[in-house]
Image 1 (cartoon, one colour):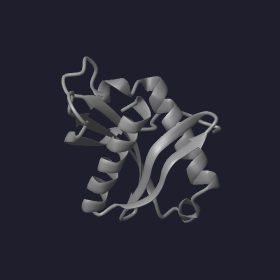
Image 2: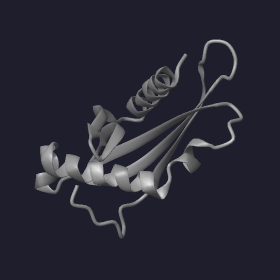
Image 3: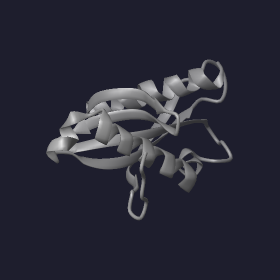
Image 4: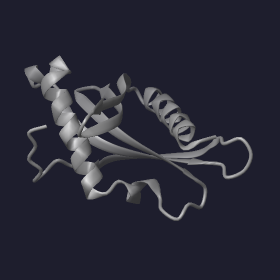
Length: 133
């Protein structure tokens, strides 16, 4: 299984978990030249931008640590573009953005399977970050 297939496995598992928690999945793998968002979902009046990091058990760097400040800025910039140009609900000021990180741990041997999912709500904020997309 290559890196992309592992990523898809992790994203599928996180989507299922989010739906269990009451989220409505709006979009997956939203891409612009300046960034990408793995999962965009909505729960109540919150639009959630989730970065998924899939790692094998006992990896040196966890998923949470892998989302650097630079990566956070790219996610925020892409989310701003999405909110202003793609998703119409934000124009009515009805939705509030939230940035989550999902860590997915998969087995190290055999066919990779999901061992654990940790979702960190409000893992980072857009405070102090100005974007023009």
